[in-house]
Length: 388
Image 1 (cartoon, rainbow, N blue to C red):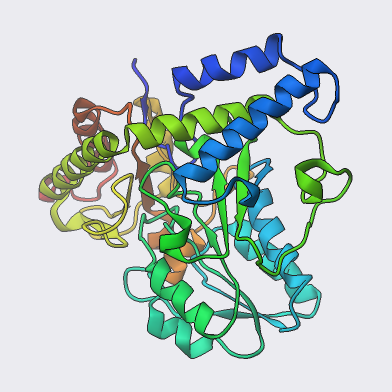
Image 2 (image 1 turned 45 degrees about the horizontal axis):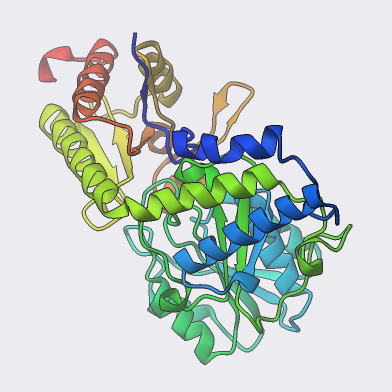
């Protein structure tokens, strides 16, 4: 049985060009980039070369790129590095953010900060009007994502960042689901800090970066060495840096073709589910205007009752189809997605939601097979099969 991998928002397969770029730094060119001998200098030169290329792709200066272990570290570093330099005691974010933002915010609450959640519209976007209602002179920072990891909804980041500038409040943007998938330019977005993670765009796991605009009120959060100009202690992951740089270079060079391909896949999957299931499926977010890489679907049986999400995932897996429900799985029990709950769903409907996330290696035939497999599974578990 061939595997159909539709969980690219969780992680994506390593591009073959990326593996080739990383290999020398895993075998022969293994020097520590902080060492002064020739092996160390070779690694250091590679790091700075890729730093410059990554910066250029997102419209930044190389000095504004700090390498990290991934999106979670970048988000934590952004939030706590800003709080260290701000007098305000409020953090503005949204309930639909990734837990890598919500959990640090919750930790900051224990430090005496107040968490203010901006309202979202029916699709899950934070509108400029919603941000204006909650930002104030006591706002220490605003942290709002570019693309939602569960629904694919795109926030109007330039407008949100403009409001932050009006109030002299720094804005951090979790762009983990945007960088490498759609064009991202930090000046066009207007953000002060931006997080990215390599394994979301066919790079290696354990490699990421934080963009910090020059002059932003931010200081190092992770200490232990003078690496990254004293902004992030710890031995640099040279193979990861090289892999991330190459992955972003490949993504940028082929972005137009990849977006067109994935948009076609998205439409095929969307249309196939709509035609096969009718009103037994609900598409979440803003499928027509969101990122084409993600399609969130809530599935009900023929009696319009929510189906067991764990059952759907396990049965799809038996068919060789890998997807997710976009939420955490603890001790084998699927919890309702906090994003779906924030959109007003009941816990039962939230648990009956699937996230299909597409990548450049997926095919139209895989979309058709996924529709058929899901239909067969729902039919088997429906209370009244004839109405399907």
